[in-house]
Each structure stands twice: as C-alpha cells, then as structure tokens.
Amino acid sequence: MAKKWGIAAIILYAVYALAMYFYIFHISSGGIPDAIKGTVADPQTFMTERELYLSDEYSKIRNFLFFVVTPFEWLMYILILFMGLSKVFEKWADVGKWKVIQNGAYLFLLYLFTTVVFYPIDLYRYWLSKDYGIGTQTFASWMRDYVLDFWINFGTTLIVVLVLYWLIRRSAKRWWLYAWLLTIPFAIFMMYIQPVVIDPLYNDFYPLQDKELEEKILALADKADIPSEHVFEVNMSEKMNSLNAYVTGIGDNSRIVLWDTTLKSLTDEEILFIMAHEMGHYVEKHIYVGMASYIFSILIGLWLISKIMPWLIRKFGTILKIDNMKDIHSLPLMLLLISFLLFLSNPISNYISRYQETRADEYAMELTDDPEAAVSTFQNLAKAGLSEVNPPLLVKLFRYTHPPMLERINTVAKFASKESTE
Image 1 (spheres, rainbow, N blue to C red):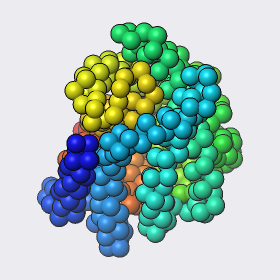
Image 2: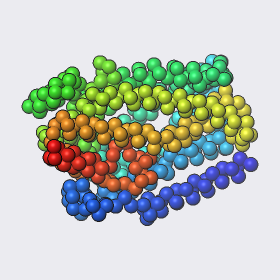
Image 3: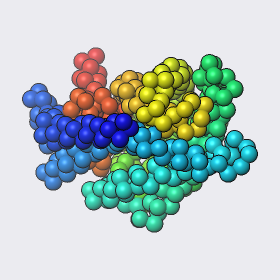
C-alpha cells in the first residue's frame, strides 16, 4: 500500500512540475502595460537588449525553481515516511539511554540526509547565479558558507526539536501552546544576536568608510531622529554583484547595513535615497511589526499542526509508518506540514512585506524629496539584479516581498506629480 501511495505521490509531483513549467515558460507573462511603455518604468528605456533577454530568462528559471523545489521537499518527506527511512534513522539513533541524545542523533541523520538530497539543487543555484553574472563567490567560499549554514541551522533546529518533542511527551494536549510561549523569547534572542554573532560569520561588517558620504547620511539620520551608530557597510562584492541594503537586529543591536556593491555602483543621491528607505523601516518599527507577525503566525501554525498531525496519524498511520506523534520518527510529517503551511502563507506574509516596503519608499521620497534619484535607484537595482519588473500575478503573490520595480517607479512618478501640483 505504501509503495502505491509513493508512486502516486511521484506521479502527482511530476504532473505538477510539468504544469508549472508550461505556466512559467510558455503561458504566464507579466508584460508591460501600454500606458507604461516608453516611460521611465519601461525596462526598454533603461536596460539593454541583452539585459532584457537575460532578465527574462533568469527570472523564469528562478521562478520555476521556486515553485517546484518546495513541493519536492514535501515529496522527499513523504517518501522518507513511506519507505520506512524515518524508522531506520530512529533505529540507528538508538545510541544511549537518554532520550535527548537519541532524538539529537536522529535529527542529525535526517538533517544530513535531506542536505545531501538538496545539495545538487543548491549547487545548481550557485552556478546559475554565477552564469548570469549575479554571483561572484568562489566555489571554496560558497562551500564554506554551505557547511556553516548546515551547522548553524542544525544547531537551532536541534534546540527547537528537542524542546518540542519533550513538550509533546509531557503535555500531549497543550504542547503547542507551551511551545509557542517558549518561541517568543527564543525568536527575540535570535533576532538580537543575529547582527553581532551570526552575520559576521559570513561577512565583514564595519562603519561606513566614505567619510564625506557618512556626513550626508548622518545629517539625513539626524533629520529622521535615528541614532547615527546604526549605519554599517558589508563587503558583499566578494559574493554578489547585485545591490542591496537592509535593516536588522533589535534594541541596541539594530543597525542599517549597506552592501559595498551599492556604494560602488550608485551616486551619493541614490545611496541617500536607499538609506532613507531603510530609515523608513527603522522609524516605522517594521522590524518589531515583522517580529509580532512572525510570532502570531507561529501560534496559528502550531495550533493547526496540533490538530492536523494527530488526525493524519490516526487515518494514515499504517501507510506513514508512524506509531505515535510522540515518537521522533514522526518528525518528517511535522516538517512536511510546517513547509506546506509556510508555502500557503506566503501570499499573506509577502503582502504585508510589500506594504511595508511601499511605506518605506514613501518615507524615503518625503525625506529626500528627490524623485529623479529614486527612479534611477530602482532602475539600477533592476539592472544589477536582472529583476523582472512586472512579474505574473502568481509569481508576485508567492515570491515578491518587495513591490515589482514597475510599481515602485510608478509610485515615485505619482509622488513627483503630486508634489508638482501642490
């Protein structure tokens, strides 16, 4: 029975992947509205013919990968359960009397297995980025980061899983609530240490080196009532050609970070617009809003899993080869549900993020009052990252945490038009 279900899952995934292939490569097309053609938002006015071609090709490949890789993760977890691999890992992990050691050993085997399965996909993404001129990182450096990712993610996952299954064994009915309560301080702690402990493991961070530009940014920060010590530079040129800046951390560890690629590629006016955008996030407390949304979504997710997972085990426990939710070999089912719920929640979380990014754009335009710099900034960001300026609706809903460049440039144009009429 499990074999038949496994074959059915593989066939269903293959049909889905084929459908997504036709949708991404042959059916969907964001296109450029006639009203936009020839304006500053039309990519043909600021991208070369080759850049337009590469942008379209690169975007389609990345979109296709996004829509097939996550369901492939679900298929992997299903096959791990159907084939009895999860119980095999649990048997191999029976290395001592302590349950915590057994569960930790099981998680290591499962995590190592899934990492090996996904390594070819991750490697392809690395080479894809280099082939299209986005990535600059050497293979040795990429492998270093890959191994670092493995141990950092495994370490955090280990803490979560050990606590989670301890709670499930101790409090069968209320485990989800206690797990959520523990999530709050853990999430805040991780966000607090991210800028000063985790991020420096991957890149070098230092105060802005261009002192003349620093004075301009400090003046802008003072205008926005933002502490000046929160501006940093990071050497991303060793890994990327794309441009970026972001806000990270909370409390005393919060900071605004500029990639050095941004500093090398944009004018001072464009950099000031980007900094004003990041200051908008800081001023409007988007980090805290995002953290609150994240914590609330965890509450909903854990509650749903506490209802769905026991039902699936009662209904399909024999096929899934799961005896009891309390046993660690049920973990692939939990990971499958988490991944599935996260995928379904993408449109909501992305909508909130796009709204925050729009608010930050509006704040930046009000703070700098330089629409020309805003337009050229967005154009340069699109060129450097080979961005799809007007993606298909499904892609926008599930992938875009920022408004597409066409929308962002239009927002700037409307702002400039409004200012000129007042």
